[in-house]
Length: 141
Image (tube, rainbow, N blue to C red; front, side):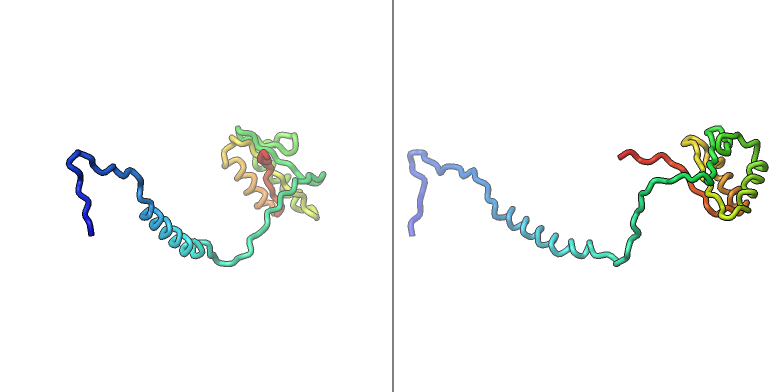
């Protein structure tokens, strides 16, 4: 067995500048194994049948009644302004007696207070109307 000693002429061993990638590969393999073990555990959930979304446009029928609310709280029956809650309730009660009942479509201004729209929903419920819907701006595609 021989041992190499530096020569007296000043020749030194060259510096080895390469990177040892073996520890990096070992760490990556360990991480890969951990991910392969834990991912199936995370993705298992309780099996339920989720409802399907139906995106169909609203068809306005002649018997539908449109009630609009401005941002100031003014209420319109179609295009006619309603004087107050008592007048609106009388009209809604008359519509609730009809068979089949017409559908009430509420068009609320985006900047209207919730109180104004909530009052109309309350009056529809008080009158006995069952079909109340909200008209919204469809999202852009």
